[in-house]
Each structure stands twice: as C-alpha cells, then as structure tokens.
Length: 155
Image (cartoon, rainbow, N blue to C red; front, side, top):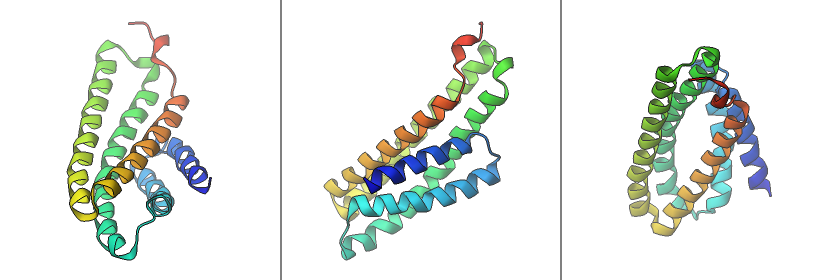
C-alpha cells in the first residue's frame, strides 16, 4: 500500500510539470525522483551486492529518462498554451513530436534493459521495467486527465 500511495503522489506531482517552465520542471523532477527512488528501492528489495550494481545503472537511466520526459511535458505545455489556436498542421506536429518521444523512451528502455540484464539478471531487470512502465502510465494518464480534449477543435 505504501508503494501505491507514493506512486500516486508521484503521479499527481507530474501534473504540475505540464504547467511549469524548464527550470521548475527540473526541480520538481528532482523532488519526485527522490520519491520514485524510494518506491523502486522498496519494490525491488535488492540485496547489498545487487544494489551496488543496480543503483549506478538506475541513476544513469533516470538522468536520460528525465530529459526525455521534459521534452514530452514541453509538448504538452505547448498544446495547452496553443489550445485555442491549434489547427491541423500544429496538431500533426505535436503528435509527431510525441510519437518520436515515445520511440526515444522505448529505445532508452531497450538500452538499459540490456545493461540491467547483464548486471542484475533478467528477472530483476524485468521487475524494474514493469514498475517503470506502471509508473509512467500512471503519471501520463493523470496528466492526460488535466488536458483538454482535442475533439472540441474543428479541423
């Protein structure tokens, strides 16, 4: 239950990202990154030897992941700021950028899955990415709930 509460806390904090500038996003990501790290630590339940190899890889992954998330959130911010002015061309551009970002996130996970698999084994690596995907889905769905639907815009 503690894990779920922390995950929800992370998710609701994520809503603020879409409404902040880049420096604010970095500060908020740092605060919630620490909370996320506690969730990961509790969920993974690693022994000391495994922890020593896991956490440096995790920290490197998080640094790269957070940069990609800032890009995604910037796209959302652009969408929100330009909502009343969005036309077919700008909507296409925003979606295209989101798709590229999603591909970049998947490539990042593939890269780190291999690193974690070598370092901590397939089960622990899969366990981490299962949690990672759960948290990302939770955060993005909470953010998406706050964004106005595009169906109200005439093409």
